[in-house]
Image (cartoon, rainbow, N blue to C red; front, side, top):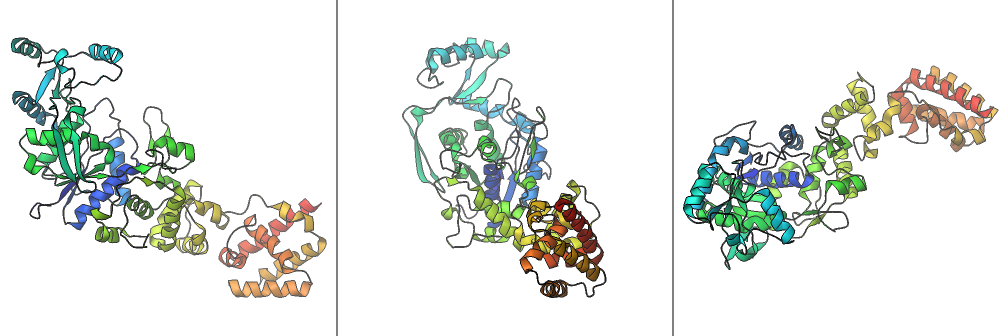
Length: 510
């Protein structure tokens, strides 16, 4: 790395739908590298393919990054000295470079119609536009210059393709994979400028990276086959000395390791692959994201960082500050990383346990509102959280684990009580309800002492009377320590629930 060159990296997604966790990991690695080297992290929207553009997707991408805490220094929203940061706003920049490549013999005009190309594909199943057939196709390499000029002046639809050399070895040093070489003869003549005047990814990415002074490019290994085209464009445009260093990141694989993780895999196996919920504006279909499933952003980012990278120690939980400090290209694996949703949930469970109320209460307040519970006292909510925190794998588990703190049980697990319910137990709870109605101090330890002394005096077994008490308060055989529950519910609510539960038990017993 040129020590004098300022580190400038970019995340350049296409606004075509939900943001896959692989895309967020790419953004994260760019961000960590930039922060570690006191550089700049740029968000550039690559919207040159207007046929795939989806309204709302750009805003969604920005919201995903904001949720993850991966804030760009320059972007369409924030601006910067190298804008515009949306490729469609840079359209006028690209044709001149495509024309320059034609003028220098490195590219050519292709006038083939869609029908002509489709006929070629039918006649040649493995058809690719390349050195093998370009001299037989409808392009400026075969046409008289005057005819080419006439077609251009008459506005005949055309594209500009790169003219790939034959039998050349194209090489570069990847920051993760080391020395990589390609045979130019195996690469087809990619379209650089489309008929609508918009560049393809291949031309736009090179032109934009040059004009934005990008120093390093982190991208998925699926882009590795495009590297020879990009290297030649940097060279043909006279910018080879300014070419960024590349690092092709390992794929995120399906849980079984067989192939790249896709949205379809998530749908099939029951876990999200998008950072946040994505609603398709055409079908209005909602694809669930990690945020809405109940993941903390800290856990999601921690999980992504460890998919293909480790710091060489046994540590697994990292704050963003620790990731910035520890991140290194040398510790990124060349091999794909299997996605393990159980491990993802483990990360979330650990982050919930280590997060304070200030972080968690806003999430839980929103969750309660989704269930029709509003205006909960913050201190009360914090006290509930303290009792159930260790039981939460996802934030959404809070309702299942703690809903009884905010509403009385609608139903009781009568099957657990009915077989052994008898008049003696009814008498015990009538007496206990009366005692509790005037008991003080209302603390967990004192309540437990009173209750167990009463059981001892009754001659019945502890187990026979603890479970009904729990079911009266929460509705089932779950929840934290039952006397902690009673202490938090308060005297009035505890007594009211005991009376309601006792009535339900007696009705079920007859």
